[in-house]
Length: 219
Image 1 (cartoon, rainbow, N blue to C red):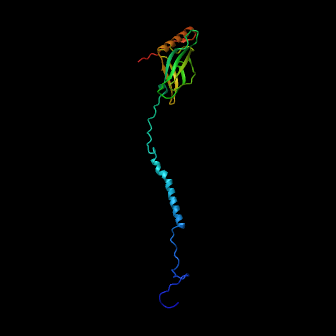
Image 2: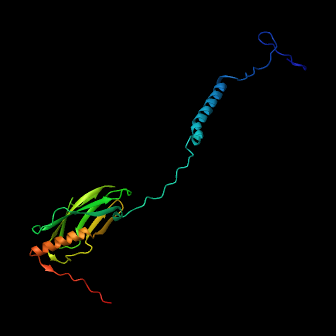
Image 3: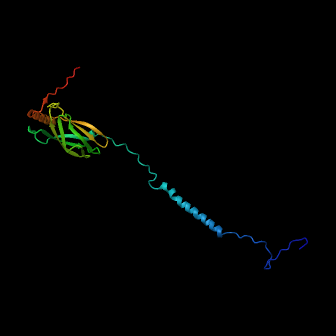
């Protein structure tokens, strides 16, 4: 073809005018649509996974403040929670008996939680032997009472007064807070019964008796 002038349109194979090279179709489906669907599903899954975390603070009771801890429970020494009461003679006093048997009641205060263990219960004077039933150590349950039989045996009639005004028993007590040594003082019937036993046993046996002289304090 030569010359100058407008270019004549070529004819297509079917005889119509040629419209130029084919244009790519507008993509509204195919791989483009599948990619969009996957993105939508992924977004929905991410939202569903985050939903419990978003709703957790709104659960009933979640934001309810915890109650403040109360004050610590008071602690009591064993002697503050247990009492020792004299009941009376468990056996009559007799000259032919080397021992005297006294009965006591150990009671724990029901207002104080916890038991008390008696590790030791004895007379203060080494010349007077002591044994108990039940044997030490034994435990007094919380709010309970234990009957204790104390057998005293004078090994000698020296080193102690025959007429003690305030005889006492030495104890070692343990609870869930501490271990404590405590002496229980008695008067009245226990002092009278103990004095009667000491006079009886020291007057009727060849036990050596040495007078106990109270120290004189001078200013």
